[in-house]
Image (cartoon, chains in turn orange, yellow):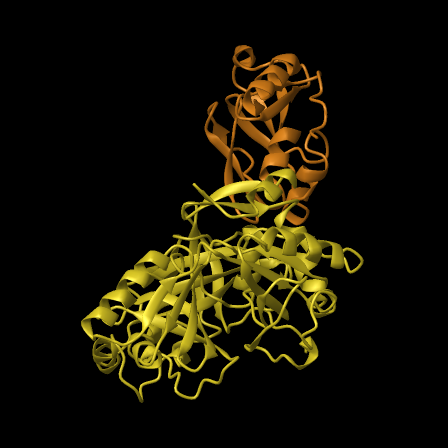
Length: 132
Length: 363
């Protein structure tokens, strides 16, 4: 069973989350549901710091033993930090997708883009539909 | 999609089901790495009912098989298994299959799931053309197959059969009841571990599965899916038909070139010898990533910026903890140690050619 989706962040329909510090910086990761679908994550391809990405463009790549999955930026902005621990321990995403398994930090271009994202409740609803 | 007799069991076990060549098959029950490691350390049970079985019987059964298969079967003894290749007239591999000698004039061919019908039609065509005095029967639907693989396989299976498994040698089989049902027990597999391939009637295969799971519960036996089967076979340096090779590839270009016996006649031999004389251009080799990244099927292989081939299989090896693969490349770069690059998402990533297999069990 997936862990609860924390209410302190926003979600994309592609199963990424962002957590806002209120100063225009967001942490980006994938949801517990997503890591469960991917199963055993063995490799994470992280972007270079300074890279500019637009919303819905690939910002990182996560690989399990069997599959290669693009991680999309939920919002537009500049990559200002990456979780380098994932280079040696990619399984952190499996173990703690909402915490230690975060992927990148971004500086938002447009705070208004957050409106396109889902609340935890809406994301829960979407998962219910996806599973049924 | 076609379902094996064990399909409902996989669903109850909450396996992730995928379409494998038209078959609804379990790719994993828990996760690939766990299932892989369980096979290497303990034992795993695989549903392999999707594979094909064809019986060839009659006075000219051997003659027909000698003609259609690359391996010389003249010295094969009853109870022995031989790996061979079935070629088209151009020398390309239709299937890599195993031949079971059941008795004098009686054989069973075990084929890959996807090319099975193609194998059947091709062998049937040649049999009719040569008026070969033997019968061919596709017994795939009524034959179930389970692979019990891993170092503890023998102790588990021994609880369910009176056959003395200690004396059963690698690539040999016996016919003996398993859990009371008539079966063929073959000491062979597709994982690089000790283990058995068990054949029995498809209507009793579920019961044999259950009995094996119970017999193995103390030893740590678990079910494993096609995901682990793929990483296990790749570590053992074995090819996957349809992925690493197809009908454009000849046995001269793959790691098992020994399955061709040039001292006998077989279909495809003329073309094969012509290919050999004009020089083989490419070869299937093992690769290991030295840079960060995982090579995957279809990625390009470069040397000095020039394209020299393509990755046919690639994964993260759970046993070796590194990315490994098979690649079909220009033979001039096939020496182990040669440095190459694999193009991963537009980035040239360092890799090298290595000797196969990647993994060999300690005896």
